[in-house]
Length: 210
Image (tube, rainbow, N blue to C red; front, side, top):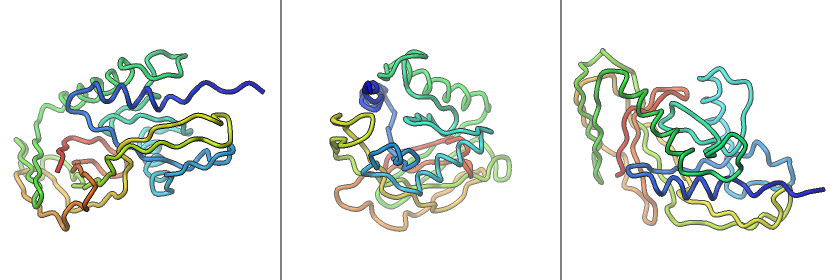
């Protein structure tokens, strides 16, 4: 039985690193563990997150790797329709497409964060937009390399970056300028980003690293 091509994940990581102002967050899923190798970092919580995107977009199937840009558009992160290694054009194209959608709304929101507070400023008044969830995503910035021992990609060494550890909603925003206090410091050895996202797999309209 021939081996399948190397996974696209390394290409996605490399392409994302070339994008300024882009934070790549890894949500590993267990949906395809039955193929012979259980994902070391998979979580059913992230399975549910992927399914929420699929429902929001009216999809009836899931795939991996799935690159979701700003909660608005998705793709395999590949540069060509038949390619298996993600090229910068693939990731860059998804990011650009998601930003075009945000600009089309005609309104602006700015998110800033520090070790204690999250500040949201907008030209929309309270009640004119939203509601949007204010969510803190905590991740491990240390790269992790796993050697796949079974399944179609047996023997492949896969690098994982920015593995998400926790996702916590800390408030809601529906317009206006607001400040929300962070409930706890970012754990030692971890990094975090705050995102302003519509519920149930909706678009992300603002983000900032803490």
